[in-house]
Image (tube, rainbow, N blue to C red):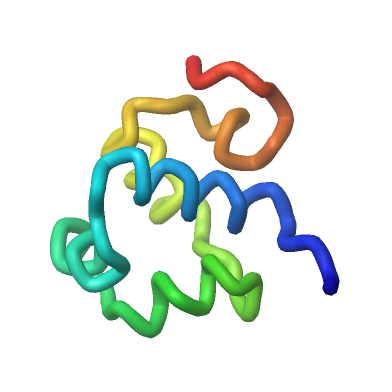
Length: 73
């Protein structure tokens, strides 16, 4: 089984830590559930503006989301 990219892994981890389903996260960020699914399965990647939105929403750094750092901030 192929390992997911770090962004996808971290998105899943953070979403679950907040106790959110994909559809709930999608609603909170005004995107579609299928878009969240595509990011979590690495079928696509968010743009820089969405990455910033995720960092703010989850209160983590963009570096953490991208796997450049292993601590949240």
